[in-house]
Image 1: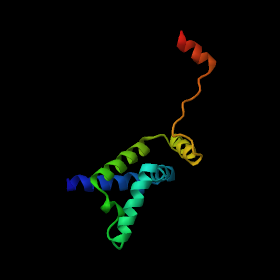
Image 2: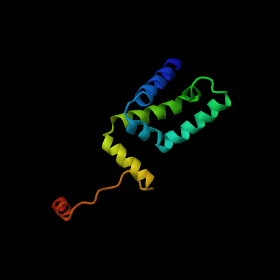
Image 3: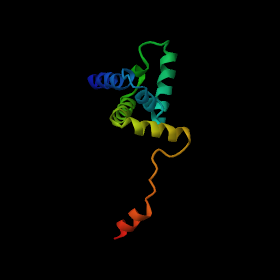
Image 4: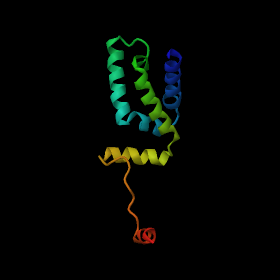
Length: 110
């Protein structure tokens, strides 16, 4: 289990913190689930006099969540990441169904 934890931490750091793409970092750290976990980790890290790194204070489940989000962010098209960020900033749902044109609705019924 300890090896799994270290592997997850290294992969999260590699995928996100070592990324040269600001959109990747922004998409990861602005994810509401990630924000909640990171805030909790920083509180623990600060209360322990900044010993180690914040990820050292994550549970296995928290690391799995962060890793899953990191993989999704890295594998998403950058344009979609930007759109998602804008939707969150405007208070809109993450993904909206596109309205279908009248022609598409007609052909779908046939």
